[in-house]
Image 1 (cartoon, rainbow, N blue to C red):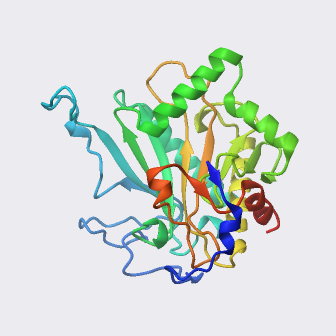
Image 2: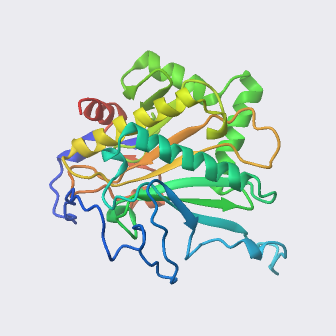
Length: 319
């Protein structure tokens, strides 16, 4: 990781995005995720009053393609990948982002996440259940109605495979969780901490790529939401609320990000080393209109940061 904090002083004549306003619209008749509205495939949403999950109408993965290996050479090989994709609506309110939800409403979302993970884990050929949210047009969200997604894969995606191997190796060598050890160091140092409560810590990782990237880590070692207690549910909801509100206050505008829950693989045997955690990858750098572009050197050599993780943590802490 190359860190170049002096780069923030360079003049900027590049792209500036339009700052997004925090409009408050409870219902949009043209939104295909609002209650009672018709979706693009012709189905009608129920008049839901809490969370709402349904099969993605334009799924990237389909369950019926598993099985046969396609022909290929010894170097180039293609295989079918089965999967299940679902859409997860957080609320019937069209503008109620996580940063504006109550802790109890976020607890309901956590309950939906757990139910989806558990349900998909019961599909015997599923190995990975990836829950994520793209917030804001800058992060490619196709609809402003607050929602996330879940993609379940037949095989472990690359990021999950790397984290599984790394955490497993550390557990075998040290008899403890890798993120437990990282958290111990971060709590002692304090300089990359953002906020914390009795059960969770939000921090800017030492290895963060995005300027205001953060990670939420439970203090207790467990692999998925299925092992989380009701008390931890409440604490998780509280820290999600605290962190997303800090993001929105940072540049006084709705903060775009990609957020993902990393939970242990399913139907793959014991995963003793897996430590549940949540990643936030926000693109903004200097303001609500100037983002970080991962191009040039970052694409061809290695990631480069324009502010130190310690400075980013201090800015978020102060909000």
